[in-house]
Image (cartoon, protein in one colour):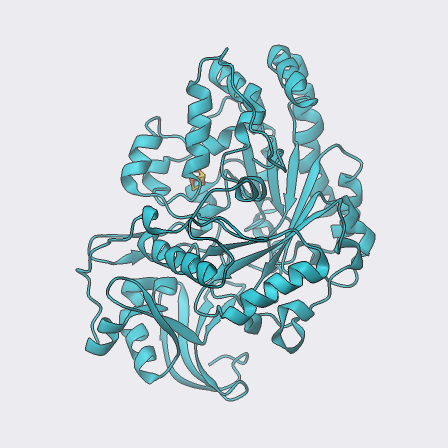
Length: 511
Ligand code: SF4
């Protein structure tokens, strides 16, 4: 079917969003299930193994894909979706039927885990929000938001084929110009500070006293498209940003050699996503630890450098051990490990439990879940409908009050694209009592979750915050409920509450 396929297509089916193919890959000598998005970008995810679980959800083995597994995946794909399909209960496989009555029995408390300073510092989980309390006083008293944190995806280019990709339906042509990127930052940096100095001097002074800054953009992450540093204007844009007083973070899965090493000097932190090793064309010998890394980021005390690793059927003890070695060899600071966010809550909790047990067996966490070295486990999992009802009793996402994520989906066609409160809207997934999965969209859908177009980003601080969508209807599996809850807690706290800003945390401007 596809010219990209190196092998014989043994079976194929189309759904509304995907083409699923069972392929005898003669180049790699293995059988694969290949998922291809039907949108213009036609991004692919290749699966060579599946997880086989016992009836309690314990991982028995990861098994190479064969005819029986392919048959089962095809038969249940419409029901189980593009992610869950690759975790299979052995009893279902043996009987040939997916047991829809299987109860959901995994609880967060079953996962060996401790929330440590590393997880609070290097991930967004709400812990750092108290540091910014005056902006929430302003919100409570006036209804106006303060965008202190932003993420930009300036293009949608990525060469990798990760099974867990959160934007598999993207269009490679959706990119912005350097001027559009600068304009976006200027509104949030200069205009927002002016606006707050003029209209909210009391809160602006309180924020300045607490943090040393006007209320304006404080932390900016360049992310998206797998490698934001492949965007043609990357180095020039970073040079521009370095003239402003903004903390910069970079999330990338590689380092194109044409970007000067010096560019990376301007980042406070860099997080390198490790893809499954057979999913990246630029890993020499399919080894992540052989990829090119700029010398400037190695053993550099001024830049926090970490890895991000998604646990799944592709995980081996060997790669976890090599991650540890690579952290030491390069003088990097941490590796956060987590699970595939496209899984449903139940399957994600099962995967988290397995990840924790693997880390424990290998000695990377202790019996209580405390990291013993630089690898930590980010215990991030989907919320539930009852939690959503209780949390958002006002029908509005609280991240809208301080955070913006600009994604360029649709930019080529419309000349503008949309802002969102977070990036997890691409991986929201639900399942009902019958086990039927409503898969994540794996793309940014502005009609459902968009707030304002990039050209009107100022409205996020010049107009009162309003509900652009009802999260109780479209975000019940939100991955940022803890952050939402913390904002609600701060907003509901007495204004004169004496509180302690959490100490010992880093990267405070990325709450
Ligand atoms: S997923 Fe959560 S944080 Fe993101 S927009 Fe929805 S409610 Fe807000």
